[in-house]
Image 1 (cartoon, rainbow, N blue to C red):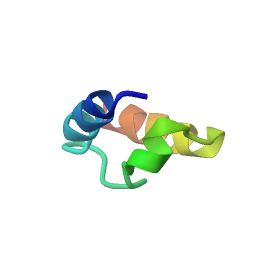
Image 2: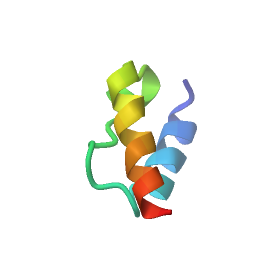
Image 3: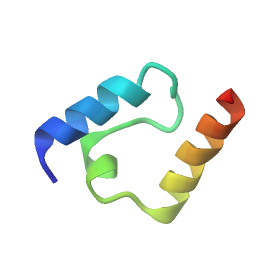
Image 4: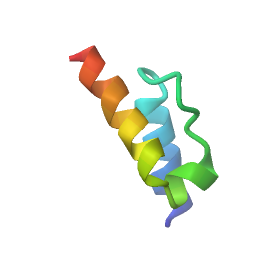
Amino acid sequence: MNGAVVKKTHDTLGKVIKKPPLTEKLLTKPPFRYLHDIFSEVRLLC
């Protein structure tokens, strides 16, 4: 995955998501539970 994409994702989602951490390693190859936690956080904001 391109480092620029990871940085843009971190900059964009990092403003609204505090947990789970948006690390490069997790954003590059995310486990299912990590994606679930991110979607749950975004859903709570809507």
